[in-house]
Image 1: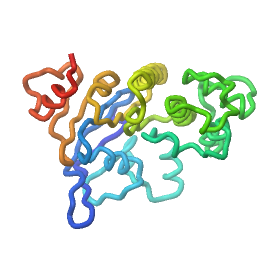
Image 2: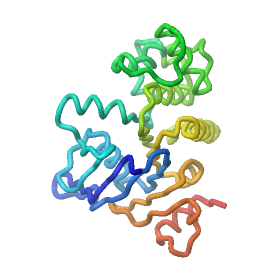
Image 3: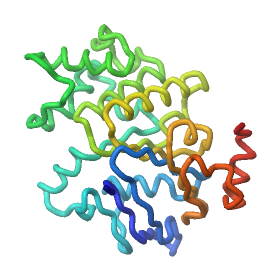
Image 4: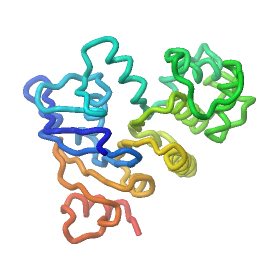
Length: 256
């Protein structure tokens, strides 16, 4: 069953600058789909549209059969329960004046009606935050630290914990490893892969790094100049049918 459907979506900016041109694809439940392309290919614009942060006039975007961006407040609230985002810059998503545990618990505070499956017993808000930290491989003692006391990789793990706290149906990752060193990049990718396996959530992973996409995703979409030039399952990565642009990306990444 398709969780997310992008149907003939186009997005133009001022002076008729085309960011996206008739984009169509779908994400099924439990699937991890990678969107790969160079800077300016339209990747981040696509993420903004799916989140409802940017408006579009042409085409449709549907989540669970409901078109977005929602217009009613109740629809917006329901949508935010189903879709969460991990950004490239984890520092900007964490309040520097709050201890980590308070930032972690914010989504659950906003949606008090949600009882995540990982909770059992009567836990305090801080204990829930500690549990979330452990779920992403961090020590629970970090709960009282502030963002400035954490490394880049640790802050990104906190951002991931925050995003999965309400068990969204769809997790959008926009270049989540781009600002990290190679070793930490691998750790974050392995974490996402393990969380996806355990929770069966769908992931839309946006990256310029085709190596990261091939590690995490089972389906790949290649964007160039705002258009989809290739779409295939991971098993078809080296097929002769691949677009010349895809082949160039593979060659540049030196993927074995």
